[in-house]
Image (cartoon, rainbow over all chains, first blue to last red; front, side, top):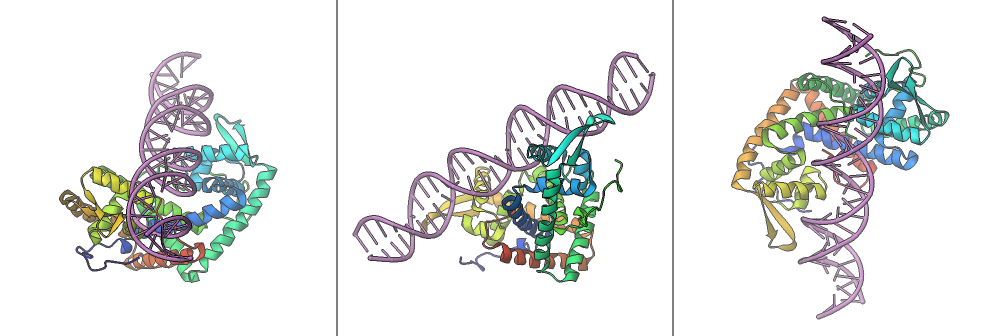
Length: 165
Length: 165
DNA sequence: GGAATTTGATTTCATTTACAACGACTCCCC
DNA sequence: GGGGAGTCGTTGTAAATGAAATCAAATTCC
């Protein structure tokens, strides 16, 4: 892999490498791939699926809409992820007695077991990632991401849901 | 949108909100959406397309492989983005005289013009983003993302290409 | 020098995804 | 209490994506 560093480079001041949105995308995708691979091989779960599982494990019985709100996923993705989790016996879906349109999602016994295995894996991967940064960098990164996210939300206006992966 | 904060929450110590890979994904996707919308409406370009355009604008004549290396895109995506850019007359593709398998991509006159419009838009959007953070936070974010990216590369092993969006 | 392997780029195919339409139901208001 | 508007969740469809197959040309190794 040879580079033609001088040919025409830097003719204008633009440099993709130093372009933050690009960096953000590349790093995020790389991290997501790492997770996706782990969850896929160890539990046969996609990222949307494990997010739904994590949220319901954390908050208990929830409507799909609530799951989407907590997990920053649009309703289509929640619906399909929930459908496959139900099909695999990890989630139970029942009608909402308070609202004929709504559904309620909760973990089955099996789902609880899987959730119990999934959370430690997430924390383990996160710990591996954290080893690449100092503690100060890590907490700063988290804080700045939240701040940037809120800023973009303010610019972009209302929320279409989130999280491509 | 009412919350059931106490029902069952925090039964274990896991909290998606504070989970860095999740934060990274959500913020990255939101930023990408913002860019995608701007490029789509103002230039009719997708993100892969504008990346290819930006890279070739920056470095001059390049092979698709090189474009992929600089832009962190896998070769399929480069190939398709290049094909549509060629079809729209922004790029010219020619055989590589040095290597019968290779191709060379360069900007057409029209492509140069569009590139000249695309870069300022990118910088403008970036500037808007930057307003949400202090200068120190901004540079720190960039640096930490690079560091994290390198760490994950080391863990994950060889590079399959990148950048979903 | 010629078979076997490797590499650059494209194409094919199965999967994933987003967008829009839909059916079912609730809410609001006259 | 009945009609219109809005909401919840699912499904259909068209585009985007990635993995593997393919094709052509170069490189390697007897």
